[in-house]
Every structure is written in structure tokens, then in C-alpha cells.
Amino acid sequence: MDMKAKLAECLAKAAGVDTAEILAGLEVPANKDMGDFAYPCFKLAKVLRKAPPLIAKEIGEVLEKPDFIDEVQIVGAYINFFTNKASYTKGVLETILTKGSDYGKSDLGKGKTIVIDYSSPNIAKPFHVGHLRSTVIGNAIRKIYEELGYTCVGINHLGDWGTQFGKLIVAYKKWGSKEAVEKDGIQELMRIYVKFHDEAEQHPEMNDEARLWFVKMQDGDEEALSLWKWFYDISMKEFERVYDMLGVKFDAYTGESFYNDKMAPVIEELKEKQLLEESEGAMIVNLEEENMPPCLIIRKDGGTLYATRDITAALYRKKTYDFTKCIYLTALDQNLHFAQVFSVIHKMGYDWYKDLVHVPFGLVSLESGKLSTRHGNVVLMEDLLQQAIGETQKIIAEKNPSLPNKEEVAKKVGIGAVIFNDLYNSRIKDVVFSWSRMLNFDGETGPYVQYTHARACSILKKADGFTTENIDFGKLNDEASVDVCKLLEAFPKKIQDAADKLEPSIVTRHLVSISQAFNKFYHDNPILNSEDAVKKARLAVVVAVKTVIAEGLRLLGIDAPEQM
Ligand code: ARG
Picture 1: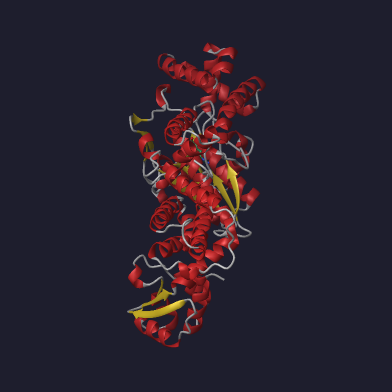
Picture 2: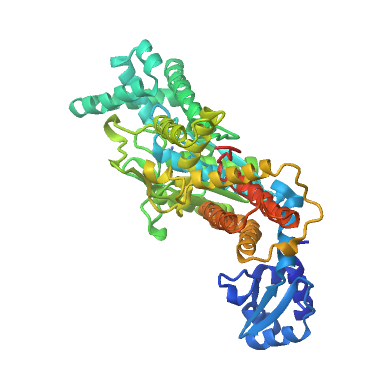
């Protein structure tokens, strides 16, 4: 059992309450003067009907402290615990050495399913860096939940349906060629799509033509659907390349088109529940009471909408996966859309509407300006990742030209840097792409954390023959060693916090803290040249750090090369 759990048990016994209750409130104070653990008694006031400082005092009097606690101090409502350094480091390190990469795992989510809707780019349009955020944050959230024992279903809700495909068909018939599309893929589709918009300004009747084609698609017209399918396949080929580079996988590619034949019963249900109203020829759900503009369900021309498909998709997912939570990752500008969709589902009488969670994030910009999606001058994800790899190759050529598997490592580090950069700040903040910053090996970056991991690997390699038996943890009584252990101890809790707040940056930042503490430890404490007992104890720290960093990076979707 780990120290925290043991301490909680002793405290619970002294207070006469549940261990789980204590465990939830047991803290690791930021300020060392307040001990290694602290328990604020405020929460117990309700249960025990006494003033918190009195509770603290009384617990202090009867507490049988566990042997790893040297000293207990009562300060106001706080009970502060000072651990015995050797027992503390022993407790932390032995747990990690025993559990290995399972150290952060728990079964908190056992038997519960979480649906995560992420990435979800639009076909026939380039996969741009805006979709990178959804992909990377969604992937990390997924892995974090899996670590906590939840069953996760990753869904790519592709934007593969809607009037825009009618436009694309018209454009293709007017100006497209099979050869050009086969050769240039999405770029060519994008070119003719943009041309459609330019020309339609002069010839608005083209829009009617496009709507007709979309209606044909909806009705299952063979020609319309085979063209659509072709655009789909071409797009997917490009998307798959990006997902491969990022190492991201989905359980289902159920995009908007998947719901084409599933919307009618839902529209029927809306009618039956008397939620549909006519408005200027269209069908809407009125959301005045919720202080929102109406949710458009069927257009004047009979076409369905993005929201119609999202409502249908939520119902389908509930039925198919019986989720405890369904999470949607998109940029902030879709806040209203999801608020409307969730409200409609609420109005339909489904109380699980409250398990639908929109997780918004900020924009991405390049140092050199905004990333426009209009007029075709977008920065493509694939190019961006290639550039990251290229920049990393340059750094490796300079820093470590004899590195084996240079290509492979450059890929892991370059792409890792992009992902890390995206996950470093709280997701709602905008992300700026700055190569010099995100590839800085000494900054708060992916390469810095990966490099720390590689350094740990290299020390262990040199310490060949080391075993983790009979370690004298009393040798780890310096501050730097204890600091590292404290951060390692906090790792499982950080994973839980990241899940609760849907905020992978909590893990990202913690990995930077561990790396910084480890590098200080390494700087202060000679390892390989120390006498055997000291060396052994310090190597245990190295193993534990390596294990935790590798696992932390994995949760973020980043590889940890052993050498770089
Ligand atoms: N395709 C949409 C876009 O690129 C994102 C879809 C998000 N998921 C959803 N269920 N609406 O903006």
C-alpha cells in the first residue's frame, strides 16, 4: 500500500470516519514548511459538528502515526505530517519499481464507457492545424481516461455530408478532371471548390444546382454517391497519412454521412414531442427559453443540417455505447452549436443530456500570422509535421551526428515537439507555432522532457548490472532526491486531475517539473562514481524517473526514444 493510503487509514481511524473521505482531502503542500502531507480538517466539520481547529487538535491527540512519519504538527485546522526521508523515498520508489508502467493506472473507471469525438476533419478540405488540436487533445484525453480504467470509444465524426458536396460535384463536372484529382488529391478538390464560390457570386443559380445534387445524395442517387465516395476515399488517404505520423487511432469513422438514414426517426420524434416549429419555411426547435437562437433542423429546401446530424449522433451513441460521458473536442467557436444541440436533447426528455460535454480549445497561429482556411492558402498539417521533422534533423546533425537511427529519432522528437507544444498550456489558450521555442532542448518543451528520459536511459545503460534489490534508501536524504520523489508521488493524482478537468496540460506540465527536478538531482548528485550503496539508491531514482516520464509521454501520445 502506498504511503498516502496508509496515512489516510491512520487518520480515518483517529477521526472515526471513512478512509476514502480522508484520502480525497489529503494534500501534498506546495510549501515544504507545511510538511510532506497535510490534512485540512474543514471538510470534517460538517460530519463531526465541531470547529475544524478543534478537530485537528483532537485527531492529533489520538493519532497513531505510521512509522514513516517523523513528526506531526497541528497548525490551525491543518494536520501537517513530516515524513521520515528514508521511509518516504522508499515508499515512493519501491511502488514505482514494482508497478513499472502501471504506476499511474487505476480502476476508477471500471465498467464505464466514455465516448470521445475528436479530430473530425471535413473531407475534400485540407487537414489543417486547427484539426491538429482536436486530434492531439482528444487522443491525450482518451489515453488518460484509459489509464484510469475507463473503456474509451474514439470517434472520428468526419464532416463528410452536407450541401458543400453538392457544390463539389457541380464544380467537378464543370472544371474537374479525373487525372488532376488523382494527382493532386485534396488540393485539387479545394481548388475547384474555391472556384465554385468565386463563380457562384456571378451565377447564383449554381447554388441551386448544388443543392439539387446534395438532395440526390440524400436520396441515394448512384452517380452522386459514387462521386462523393471517390472524394471521400481520396481525402481519407491523406488523413490516414497524418494519423499515422501522429500515431493516432479511432474506433469508428462514423462521420456525418453515417447518419443520413438515421435522421428521419429522430425528426419524427421531435415532431411527436411537439418540439418542431415552422419558421420561414424551415423547421426549427425554439430555444428562446434557453436564451439561444433557434436550432435549425430542416432547411427550407428539405436539406438537413450539421445540428440535425449531431442530435442524431448523440442518440445513436447513447444507444450503441451507453456512455457515462460523451466528449466533443472542437474549437471555441462551436460553443453555441453544442449548447443548442445539448438543449434540444434535454428538451426531448433525455436526462443524459448532462453527460454530453463540449471541450473547447483556443486557436492556432503561426508566428508569421494567422492560418487562413479561405482562398486555399492554408498551412497543411502534413507539411507542418514534415517541417518539424526536418528542423529536428538539423538539430541532431549538429548536436549528435553519430546517433544511430537518426531518421527515426528525428520523427519522434519533431512530432513529439508539436504535440507537446499543443498540450503545454491549458487548452483554452491559443497556441502559437514557433519552431525555435518548441524545439528548444532547454525549454519547457517536448524535446527537453524526451532528452531527460534519454539521459536516464543512458545512465542506466552505463550502470550495467544494477539490480533493484536491497537498496538502502537512507542514502537518499538530500533535498534534490526527496524533491524528485515528491513529484513522482504526485503523478497518479495528476492523471486524475487531468481527467477531471479534461486538461492534458496538467500531465504535460508535471512532466516538465519532474524533468527539472531530475536534472537538478543529477547535477547535484554524482551517480556512477559514487560508492556502491549510494549509487544503487540513486539509480533507483533514475529508474523511477525514466518509468514515469515514459508513461507520462505515452499518455500524451508522444514517444520516448532511449537515445537522442
Ligand atoms: N467537422 C467539424 C469541423 O471541422 C468538427 C466536428 C466535431 N464533432 C461533432 N460531432 N460535431 O469543424
